[in-house]
Image (cartoon, rainbow, N blue to C red):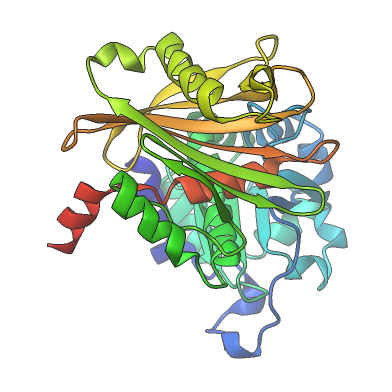
Length: 363
């Protein structure tokens, strides 16, 4: 809660950070922000980037993503010295400015000039203010974050305390952009209707997905492109007791579904989908849209080792039907980076709703 309070305070006191953007810009005249998904331009003094403050920033935004077949950082960070920041670099989708007001270096002074004298004084009086976010500062569709403090020790302390919330901020921004992209075309209403009719659940299905299998207790949709195979499946069974949420039990449930329905070659039952046991499996309890759930991330493979890749799943109960659902998104794209593909899978999975939830919302 304090984190959001700081944002509100910051917006009301230092929103005039950028001296070049004082006054309201006409966004209709702005160029559209560019850049790759998950990429952030980070602007801070070079000595701070190479020191302990830079280490803290890297620990926040360059944390390795869990459950991928090769190392990929949470975000792709492109460091820029403030003295080299030009109009092209200012036009990217995501930017972070980092500074401390006690620094006298040339790079820090450039960033510090974004702040008014009044705002610096208010920050000096209230050291809890360390963050402000803004949109469309230099380009349309842009997200900008300013991280600041009276000195490095104070700022590092705030960053260390709010690591996950800072990550979540840009994760949320990227998820919204991904959702806008994948749902910009027509959705596959036929599959959505079949899910409600046959399985009492709903999923927003983007254009390009096809219904591969649909039978009692299981449904599988898939999109196959030239070099990317995207798959989502939903399995469910009667809920008997809470032991189903134990980590091992979740994997047993998954195994019972994949061994029955998912194969590299349906004519060869031994090619069913399993997990790569030698790879780490990441599981945690979460709130999945007001439902207790177990989130699981890891690597899948076919039992004959012919295919493999990352997967992410959620396990939860529909209390109205007394049914436990297991929903999963997985991809097959050998040799390619897969962070953004898995973000896409998660955006689709996040649209899942039980029929009782839809009925409740419509009332």
